[in-house]
Image (tube, rainbow, N blue to C red):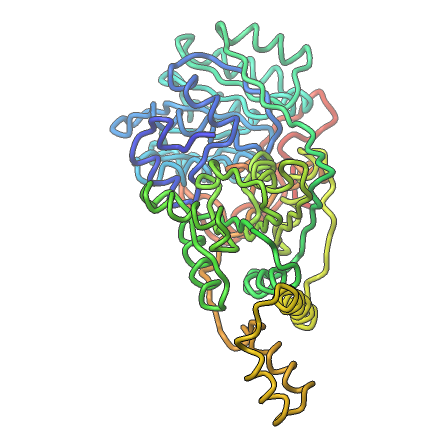
Length: 499
């Protein structure tokens, strides 16, 4: 997989992506972005949660002229919540571009939206029903739109929005780029594509089953501030021959490597800021066993091909299902058995279950290890080392000192002291890590687990949102929906409320 820098994106967008903590493009992003940048129409088939929002948002942002006061981009979404989240994603990606975004949806006072439109947004993210209302009031004109995105098109058709979509697209210039994204491709979607897209490029990124009998997969639910201690206990319990610890960002990798070193572990970090020479040195130490834990970002780990990696620790949940597959693939190689353990905060469990669903696998839950279990694991490893050393011989130079000690001290206490000396005691060494924002997957329509941020959707609790294209005040999205036209279908399209 490529980094966003390798995709040839504008500096301001790469900068925003880096601010968000991402380096590597997901498969849908890697395939869609280059095609979208050419201006071709395209159909993207991918499950929600694989990063498709960024896949269409990034090329859309690159085409916007911030100096213009016209609406240049239009994204249609089936529900108000999705519209809000897509708007938030685009706003974050466009932080340094000067591009203004505005979500338009039912349930919010239409006069308030009309006032917000006076700020001249460049991109409108809308539910079909409310956008039609604005078009009929002539408060939104689409005559300068050059790019249209139909997000979750299958959902919009299932909800009976076909007529609205047709009417909206009829009001957009024919000379435009149209991108359609859908998890499924029923006949209705193909018919819609045939009607409104010109020679579209079809890009499909569908999940593959990830079943590897050589890799045991577990997750542990633990609060963010307890993750580091939990990782240390896991390492003490399982004494990996070689282990890879995955962090989400370069900062996280640096802090993890430093913290592990403070507690006496042989650990070093690997990320994109290292020179090739530094990277080669770290990898040489890892292959030769001079370090037991390699702490890495997804990007840096791409070239890791070490057959005797016994454990993978996902300190941070991977951003998308494909990244999970690549991470755990670092172990269980060459017919060997491996263990993959993911640390999940309570707010990230839905995202982990989404990864399970997409990859068609089951990750077993494990309890948080205790200090006693960690000590037991360390003692067992220490005893094995002592026994191995004793069996290898070449102890003559030490025997006279050992005999003197036995003459003056109780043998049991002497062995206990040796075990204590050889066992790591880390409880009195405090390590503080900078908290990372959790990845969360939004549940929609009876909790079907769909998600769509940079590989996952965030939850919206109704407490904050967009006001004139920016974060708004408390209570902005509360209340029943008004102003939406009744449809022929039994579903209330924009009456989506989190249960």
